Length: 398
Ligand code: AMP
Image (tube, rainbow, N blue to C red):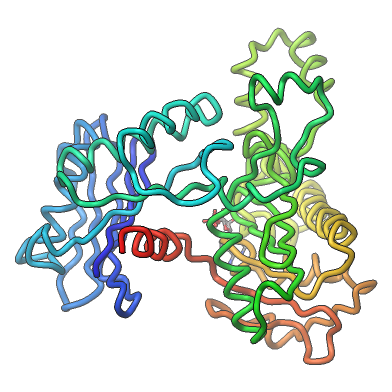
């Protein structure tokens, strides 16, 4: 069975074609500047075919999907001989609200429910819906599945997901913590259980997804019980450009003082804050490491804040679960920055965590970076959201 995994943004569309017998990625690619002019980078990963990397007109997502299918099936760049070899399509959808606690096969009712979730993710869900509609238009009755970033967090208890605001805002408007990166937290936690050789139902795990956006998730016996992102992906840890937790009073103060509109204020909190805002240097942790090394105090402060926040949230989840068996680092920063992992882990002496510096210096593989004697194990596990989407799609269409 071959499954096409699609992640549609407002002007971009990422894809992978995965052979589910071997879980091998046959080809992957990225359409960019959809609706502006258009560019497609298509990389076949089997059969020694060349990479296609050119501008081509992509006025809408339908032309983008058609171009992807064309490349996947072409003699020169293709990895399958016709579209009929693609058995199903898995779509990443950012927000499933309270309607979707797991992945679902897409039909007209699901599409209507997705539209109802759009006010919760006004930037992301419309792009995901456009991608699904384009695929349905181009690929006809090929079965399709929606996999939600929020679904894994739907097991949180009320005490973790409620905000302490008047209850009717939850009841009437759905105001609550939803959490994001659920597909990533789900993948790394189940992989961690495999690496520990134990059923996930016997483990207390904390996964730290640290990339451009960052979130932490407490997974108690296989179920998410808390996570650091909230109603939107703006809160929790300070991130590349997002502010993380912030007193709402600051918003009122700054809007009054500088006359910002709410859109201007949110743009500052989403795009100009986080480690970029504090350091004034960059949102990229490589640049921050380099600047801190050169003695830039604000870069050092931004990094210190990030490490401190991760440690603080992890500590709160140890308390929430009354213990932890393993801590997982994943995503761009978590997978690549040995310095970040060491700095965060240095807070975990009270848990009996001991890091093996040699293991911690390795890259790109699933690895335990704690010593064999460490009371709580620490792992680096590269995330693979596409594989989760493909597996769910296979399981649902089969
Ligand atoms: P992601 O959102 O998971 O793709 O992560 C992207 C982020 O990972 C980048 O913005 C960088 O901050 C970070 N990153 C990637 N490689 C490294 C590295 N070697 N050291 C530190 N941070 C890195």
